[in-house]
Image 1 (cartoon, helix red, strand yellow):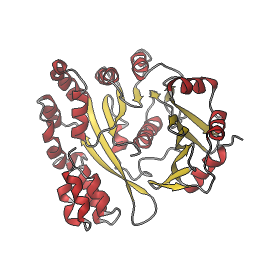
Image 2 (cartoon, one colour):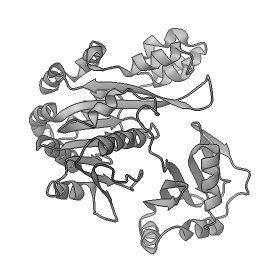
Image 3 (cartoon, helix red, strand yellow):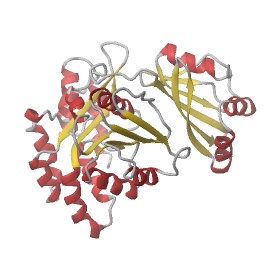
Image 4 (cartoon, rainbow, N blue to C red):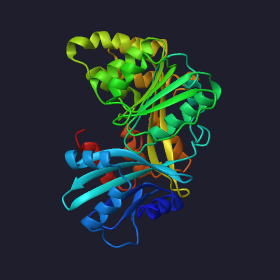
Length: 363
């Protein structure tokens, strides 16, 4: 048993999402969104390095020592998988571990709208799940892919860095590829995937222009493509994609994106105040003909209005979802205000008026 394994078991037992080990500090767990110290001694540099190197391959250690950071996955059979990042900091080595449960939860178990299951059955197009780090994007995508795996008879290729949720074949053939292990980059793997007869392609993250362009191309050539972006809200997501391209290419990419895009699911995580745990607030934009027209005509700022009026298609705005949770007493007014897009809607609920000063901070 590795020396780190008891920490991993503690994560599972305490329902922690993350573990932080850092030279010069005691271990910390993130439980329900907040960091908590573990009753353990301060970790010394040499001791922590030995613990971390014990679970890493020679290739991973070499990459870390050359570059100063590295991502990889680690699994304890029967317990869980972990997404791991090693990095250097002022006092020495450090590591962050994200728990990836062995069991993939369904859309229903996650408390997400059932409409997300229908996205798994689309014949083609681009579906994006967006939100800040730690918002549960990977968990949502895993639920959607798992539904496709159960309901379709197709070939699914995932391209991840690192592989997070492990999908065992059910009705689908699933090939999972890890950047740095099975392929050099997202773009390389995505380009190759077009020759590997996939029906569904999961791109862990659209990090660069080439990957974005290839994902759009794949979705326009008969594939169903899922991916993520670190954006909040459908309108910001569309703008981020278009702005990634040089100005002279943006008119064409607006046309391509309007044809490729099927849906944007944007989510953010809240701490519950009615009981222990967290809850996900979601925005859903379905690419209706009216939405496509706004994208083509560069009227992105009007997308929120169409989301508001698109409830019959299953659309919901992030702020409406947040307001619903606030009215039900699930979340605090302060966190609702801070994470809302239109903060003016939530200002009347705020008792501590100093929080309202956030609206005065540019950006």
